[in-house]
Image (tube, rainbow, N blue to C red; front, top):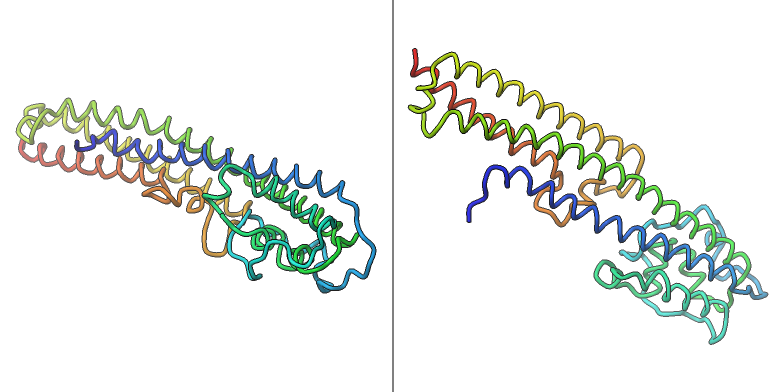
Length: 285
């Protein structure tokens, strides 16, 4: 069945709402999993020895937080490296698998090995320390706990952005609804075809054209506000070099910018309606 004009305008917004609900649930799951992992790591005892096998960079707590569970990493696959059974590194690995790698969407979204996952999440240096050495040294623990805290904070910042985006989508939808209703009302008033529209008379048609211009201005304001919200997301939150916040959230949708797509669809309908009105006005002269 062909989509109605209302469906054309509202589908992207409904899809955006659904995508945001999924993303918020997954981000909360990841944040809570990281918090649980942090608690378990805190209770893992450290082991004596020289903590230099992974290189000095691995001991730097300011490096390595990857900001995403899973994803591509520069380290090789592996499930545990040189750690001996019963060591602190094994305890860390088991804790990670039981928390971070056990979020409901892990297999669908990431499906990485342990080593690739910790490399993507915390950086290759910490991943090397956790998977390619033989003891869980105090320096490793400090660096790991710091990286976990950074990852938690990144999820919290992303959740703040999601809440702002959800509010923006709801606001845009509530403002587009009356515009859409007004367009439908004008369409009904004009009837079927240019001849029916011309029968309304020049004055009535001119009034409809004025209403159309006001609705175009409403759409322009909605679009401008959306652009400001998207720009604010980009200032506050860095997703990656090759993807912005909206594209990340809506990557599985037909439109990467669903609100702007909805505004554009409605704008196209307004333009067609204005053209029809002007053709009908020409017939009345």
